Length: 268
Length: 137
Length: 200
Image 1 (cartoon, each protein chain N blue to C red):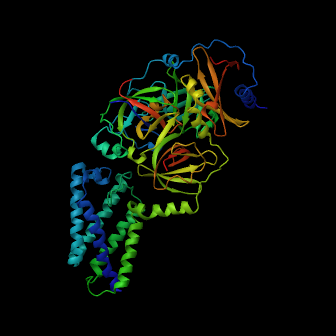
Image 2: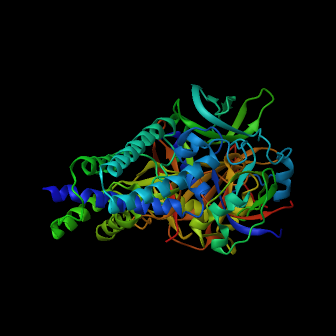
């Protein structure tokens, strides 16, 4: 099945051409390499220059793979893809938090997908170097096209930078079809009561004196009681806020002050 | 600068426990959760290109590291003074987001306070608060 | 009946009516200016706040917590019955563990310890990109690192466009950006979600 081998220089040329062009014409190469392992390896300005030069090299190699796909060009592709794998290995060891900077503007951390993708390119380059007749030597067109489409799909699937094109829409569809995390409609989460409380006149009147965050809370008779510590000029006290569980006007929220002897204090 | 109204969040910076353990010293190199500091979207031209508040129709004066802002919590009137120590928040990712206390609202994520600065004006369990940001007390 | 239940019943009656107000002792002014005046000297902008402490708990001795700050600072944090403890929800000192991270706010004492008014244990506040939603968790990306956000039934809530919080997280936008407050599970890349703030 020599036609499968004939597909590889086409696949490589497509990937390298697209990736190379994107690097070569990037309007902010310094910004692109800022969070990458390349920046760590070479420093800001040199990393940006190498980034652009690499892009030009990839684009030229892509053209050569199409126009003159002999063994020397193929071996250059092998060297380039071995270089990719070496760079990824360095990045994984030296800067595991950094982005690869390999494809597209999106910054993604290295993972097994990055290595699998580089391995895929190396395999294609090796087949090109040692097994592929020239791609224009009458391959069967439909199988060739299907194989290229399959390889492109696999390349996209291994590219975390491109997840927004297919994986994210798929995840959104799944959520739309079978929504997870729908919660419990009858439950009023504590955060809802606290958010209402901090916007209420009662809270605002006391807020300068509140010393703590929520000390205790419980529900009673359609209300949620929230307890805070208070530091008054002459004593410590407790503020008990009563927040209606059902949605209500903020001025329905009440506050009561109780001192350390459990004396309920009158608010002035 | 006339006062601007927006949303404030809080973040951790400096060497710290938890998911922000790799946050480093921030863009200005000296950010710490224990200091009254904040991240500002226009601390530098490079920062502005990332945070892009203009995408939300917000124009913020570029201010360098150490510049002091006065931040008032619109829910309780408490104020804290804080110095710029980092770049952020990513304003353009949250355009139009609004948080209100009564009729006082803050729109767009404009400032990220350290935990110590935020807790001086609100409880840390509040993720977002509406604030007034001024250059004078 | 436990003392806690007794106290809750008393405070409920006090808050909702049914308890006679005893001793209208002069409280003095409750105007905010009086509180701010009593708060002590203001912290210089950019300065370290003496009323604040941060670190991981290294020891628990009764009501005293010993912490090691991320910058090497050691703190002794004294708690009382008036100290609030947040650990995903309002909790007690008994829920605090060695290895927990915390932020504390209180009053710095002459002996250098911090008399804590509020502790926030393992609390995190971060912006994140939503990768996907699963049946009991949210997968997040925070500055390029993956974070698992566990959804706790009846606790985890979402705030959509500033509206009241709800327990329905199904509208958290996959592929979108959110702000998350949660409780870190120490020494993991996982958190328990308290609140997700999303614009939808």
